[in-house]
Image (cartoon, rainbow, N blue to C red; front, side, top):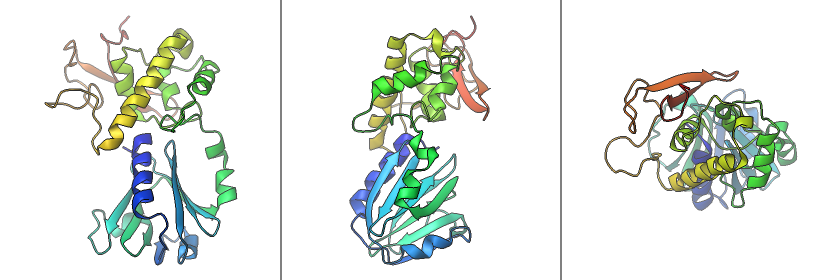
Length: 263
């Protein structure tokens, strides 16, 4: 599932392999007619913001994507077979050395950089946990202004803090023994700062590998609670539970004993 670490990893790979190179061919799905306008342009920068990816071109055009729950960006050496079927490609760009393809995004658009960067979807984003200079104080201030929201919902709200998805939400709350269903106002500032620092630490650490890892052991599960519903807690052996939260009914995995939800 794409989260902030996924997008920052992709942005780094694109920067290393494709920035400064010219797009030789470009094709998109029928709902993306401006894909043809990318031909001949030079890719200048690849920038991740939370779960969004921005590709800036030398003609003032930006490709903006949000991968949702199932989207992905792939880079292939030219001529290598794609790992996903072509009909899932929303946008495919060919460079001299590689193909860059966006598969099954929730959103993809091609517009002027000024228009894209002025989108409320981007301007309202909270501080990015993986930014070089993460503004922790600004994130804490946004959390304090939403004290009625349960912690599990707040961590997923990209307008409060950007980058956290379902996996990190569940894992970080378990590791810090936090109740996902208590409102933010029930958690003191020190606890919220610890939660954000923990999320940033593991997101930065997981940038180095394709498989997220939250447990120190090299054996068995890499995850403490995510997608382990009904399985024994690795700390207390009670069954892991799952409950859906918020208007979008996103799944939260937790241990009732370790995280105190049974009290």
